[in-house]
Every structure is written in C-alpha cells, then in structure tokens.
Image (tube, rainbow, N blue to C red):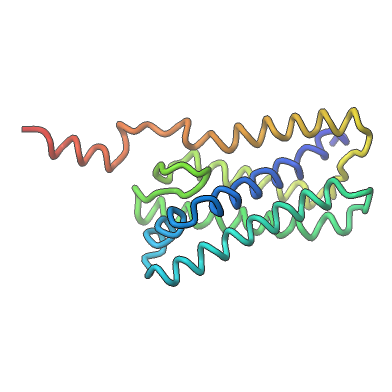
Length: 188
C-alpha cells in the first residue's frame, strides 16, 4: 500500500473514535439512556458503562492520533493504539449485530443520531474493524512530508465524515418500527 493510503487509515480511525467520544461527552444523558435501553440495565450501571465507553473512545481515538502524527516514532508504538481501536470497533460491531438480530428497533447511539440500529451502522462498524485490522497488520506510518500530510488529513476527514453520516443518511423513518407502529395505531 502507498504511504498516502497508510497515512489515511489511522487518521480515519482516530477521527471516528474521537468524534464518537466527544459526541457522547457532549450529550451524556442521552447516551446513558441509550445504553440503558440497549443493555436492559438500571441508570447507575448504564451511567458507569456509558462513561467507560466514552473514556475508551476518547483515549483510544486521541492516542491513535497522537501516535500517528508523532515525530516519526515508528511502527511499534503505533500498533498498540491501533490494536485497541480495532478491539473497540470489533466489540461495537458485535454489540450492534447481536442487538439488531435479537431486539430490532433499538436506538443506535452512534454518530450522535437517534436512529435505530440498521445494517448501515453495523456495516460501518465492520468497516472500521477492517480498517483497524489492515492498519495493525501493515504497521502504517503516517507521512511527515507536509504536502502528503495535508492530502492524507483531508482524505481522512472526508472518509471519516462519510462513515460518520452514513447510518443516519441511510435511515428511512417510514420503515422504522416505531414510526410504523404509530402509523398503524392512527389508522381508523
């Protein structure tokens, strides 16, 4: 893979994790309620779990970013935060898949949107898992040449934005179980 492509992958992973953590930090009560519904727990346990997830997203996302943009530290330290990010993505992908199969219609809690878990949100989680696995296996080194770093950063922001908005953009409110139940109740 090219240096430019290897530079984009860790930046995308860092951006998605950091944005997810910042969104959950910005709206902690909403995220806590979503966690409470997803795991069928009390508010106290959901608050601890939501805080733990938010902390994991923020620390892992920023660790990947710091190591990726570090001063040429090398592939060995880069592997640790990328492995942690890949693990988070894998847990999230499995979590969403199990919820989607066993209890459809639950809120996702990703991207700061309040849409239901759908195949797009699950697919995005698996894409993040695949990107993390590729990055961990290939030991990407982010380029430190200014012109390539600018291009890699812009590409990473664009790809991260597409992946961030994809589940909400592909959500059709008229096929939502909650919306369908409201429509069916209102029919004479």
